[in-house]
Length: 220
Ligand SMILES: C[S@@+](CC[C@H](N)C(=O)[O-])C[C@H]1O[C@@H](n2cnc3c(N)ncnc32)[C@H](O)[C@@H]1O
Image 1 (spheres, rainbow, N blue to C red):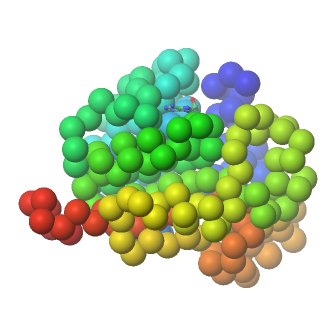
Image 2 (cartoon, rainbow, N blue to C red; image 1 turned 120 degrees about the vertical axis):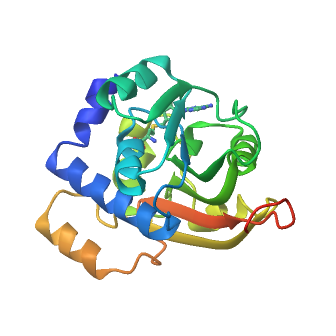
């Protein structure tokens, strides 16, 4: 799939709904302060990077390993957001360079996910949000199992998602999910609004937490 095809999905009725729900959950759980800096790792076409930049209004950088998608993201967002080619497993930034770090459904495509998590947490100063795909979800049963548009992705369970962070300097870890019903219907939207994000069965898992590196000169 090319960048334009991928990004255009977010403009379909279903894509818009999914994108809005996931963005709302990210912002609710990330709790950004206005003007904070943010790094979005595996930003792809920049859909979430753009949404986060608009909400936070601070310096935002998106990085991805795919040059075509980085070029597309730059073209879609000629504002102050910076887009660069970078590998999540070796981020070209100093420790604690960004107040916040996000990575939305990118770790699912990186075999060395622990290396990527170490890197994301190394460059973050205050708080992080990592989006993953949920193997215990209706979307997995309907599409993930067969590959579909998620070819090559690793689908985690909520328990696995939590365990990913157990040996890292984090605190106040929270796991929420969104997108309980993988169809484009008003019924799905009603159910989605009624169910709490703590339910472990949404297709989108979001792990959030604070950096726990007290004593390194930060305010945490
Ligand atoms: C499913 S897309 C998600 C893109 C975007 N975050 C979104 O949610 O729309 C996964 C992204 O991870 C990127 N990716 C895969 N391996 C990577 C790596 N080692 N470093 C950085 N990005 C990587 C891919 O190029 C792709 O853009």
